[in-house]
Image (cartoon, rainbow, N blue to C red; front, side):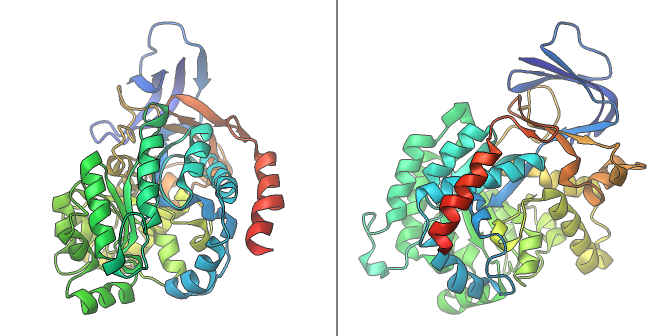
Length: 434
């Protein structure tokens, strides 16, 4: 299906031509066919008038746990480890696949309405998430986050359930939907597993050429306890077992030290910054200027809604910019709006191995339309400044994922929101909370 956007301001994220006014952007099938200021020849199934609107690449939420929408605000007011051990882990023990599917559908609806077109998700009952993602229409890198609390000497793939989960997820879902779903290998974190599990997951990733997704150095105590126990940082420890050989995602990276950032840069590992979650859980602020200076790609994520409490990438961009400028701006200058937008789009796409995040011919047509006639975006002296500091999810009037319009003017075209609400309210929440 050929769809033409006309008379639109295109924020392309292409450094050679970042903003094209009065643009024509042609989408043919799942890809962008042309971008320019002259109307392309031919007939189109639909023409979208973009007057007063901005067309930009869809957001990439590069680290999340989407079914945790079920625990929005639960256990608030705690540090990370209290929150996990006293609230989240006990609640998650009651989950089943039906709960996870309901929470995933609710989270995906929130994301789609706020302009997210691609995610990297780590969670349990991952195949239930995969089916929901496929129906919703966005793209996703999915992983199950291997956990192993047993005695390392007793480890076997049969005793670690997440080994089997890796195998089934890969065999059943990798490249599903013509690449809509990709599977990543994953370790939840250094502190929730041990060496035999790291080695098994690293070997699985090597055999199948998979990226890795791991929580790394989210808190000072996590980072220092690893050094005390093993003599090296979490990043360096996992590297000894081959975890980073294929690159991937290191979520958080608040407390890297001793050459961690340089190691990650050499391995092609992206730091995914989750500013709102890190602030809410009192974990700290990742030093983005330093990470970039060390050569790391930096992307943005929301983390799970239970520690955020939303999937609002506009908010993540603004908080990321403000905290970096406040904490590190005196030495590095201001973090520019274009850099923050790149973290939320093209950098995230690069981290996930997606040929998206840029409006250019041949790229995947993951696009969103933002209405700049809304009061909070008018007047506009600088489009990128408005997107980072003024825009909100309510300004998103269209979400196109892989060339298919999945949300428009408040209407979900692939999800039944009332059915989702009923499933969450009548089944999932009573199952978890009684």
